[in-house]
Image (cartoon, rainbow, N blue to C red; front, side, top):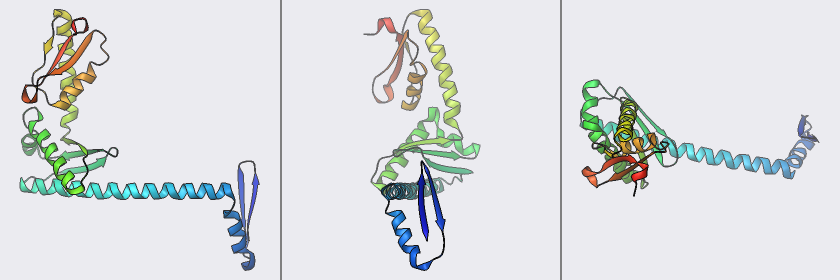
Length: 212
């Protein structure tokens, strides 16, 4: 039989093999409210995790297949490709390419990379009927670019402080402007904002005292 004994937070199970009472004791144990509540909650958790894992796996396969198909059209063979859901809305895509091909897909100031990222986003939306935020990273370009942008932000901030005048940054992609905004967010004497539209959109850094 299956016997249950409770003492504080400890539970003990003792099993013997008396066919006549095994099922009855098993049923009696699992009918206890605390035990039933625990297992129902656990089963629900397992179901949700399994459902999410299956969805993530399906999404990962779709994105991987679409990227490989696109690269095949361009006659580019990746040395490494990984697709990882960051959360329910964001997908990280890391792509390693031969050096000769990486420049083609990154482009000047990541123009081509951003366009490719948008194209993939549209393709995935067509396949899944869901909009995802894709973060495409080719040959760790984003990490190296982040350091360049951090240096640009520091230099521009120094110029603003020395001159007392605003500095208009050169053309940057939206994710690059965001990084500079974040880099200077804690500078109490400076203000950052974006002006203009499309290719004319620029990031402006100015002394906070002159902000209107």
